[in-house]
Length: 529
Image (cartoon, rainbow, N blue to C red):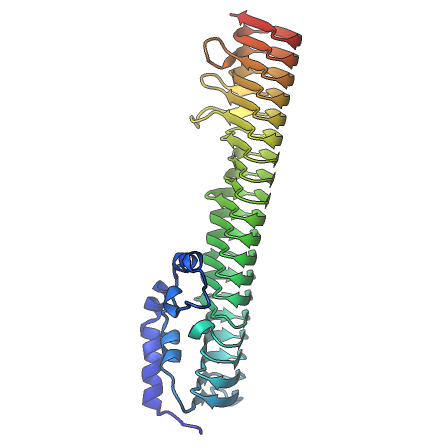
């Protein structure tokens, strides 16, 4: 049975959608924490399932789907401006369907196919040569698309029943020309929202399968942007706010349970962000990418891995994070130009933070093992190169330059720290008073419980320390750090054995110290002023 609604009823319904659009946007973010607690605490989720356990979509679209009953309803309004005309094909089968189509312009094409029960499709077109297609097969589906512009294409395909009565839902609002959006959602109660695109030649693709996955991004202003989201599993979520710029490319691929990826405010041109997460409870957050030619990649395989970068400002920055196994964390900040930060972690419970301030910095950290920690912070000069590799367990490296004083500079440093074994520790700090330029530092520790604590002040210092064995130390006197102050200092320490100690300090200019200790229990004291 076909029921044609009156024009006043149609206008009232469209006014209701438009008046509540801001409220709809404010209500889009739903809590996944409630869902996680429900799954964790329930001994049998299927036996005690309740739709209230998952905070459901509170949009006007969802409420319209929920109140539909028996009888189909079709409302069609088409207005041709130039006389070319618009096309609409609507097919409905079953009970509780509703379809409303309004086209103002010429050359617009609308296709709606709905089967079974409680489906809702609302399509509005204002402009020319727009194509919108809704295909819904199942129960509790909903789709709303609004296009204002020329040559836009939207395709929404939803199949299957909602999970315990929860809707499959898709909302698109596109303002601009030649934009393309494709949404494919299987059964299981998914949501997809896309609001206020307002740009040209943007491409959006979302594919979700499993149970209760979400994808929400709002305000994409700019041209030639590409966003692709693929989520498979349970309670995966992706949120993106404000991609403002041109030529940005964002790819999200999440497989597993409770994975989350959130990107907020991508400003600039030709940025490329790619998140791929495979496992459970992995998270990735990138906020405020401002600049040009930035590239961020995150590949996390395992459980409870975390990647977060709060500041990426500048040109030509590249951040790459690859974490495998469980409970690994990575930081990564970048301010400046041509910075490249890379972190590989293969193990469990590893922690790395890399920060860059300046030009042409390159930091690489590679940790293989468990519970390793590496920290590189605030290289405020240019042409710095740091390479850190730890292959063992519970090793710690801390490298800081001109920290925490931004006014000090450290330029052209080349630092390599290599620790193989367990419980090794190395710390290096540049420039607390004097500028620290053109330094070369190399640490190699093989064994267990080796420690280096070093502070460098001045210019043209060269330090080479190699410790092979266990419990070898290079420190200052009285539990302080070994101090190299002045200009032109060179220190070479080789300790091959166990429980060897080099202590003291070097203050002055043009000093050279070479220390070699082979065996066990040797002590060398250095004092230069």
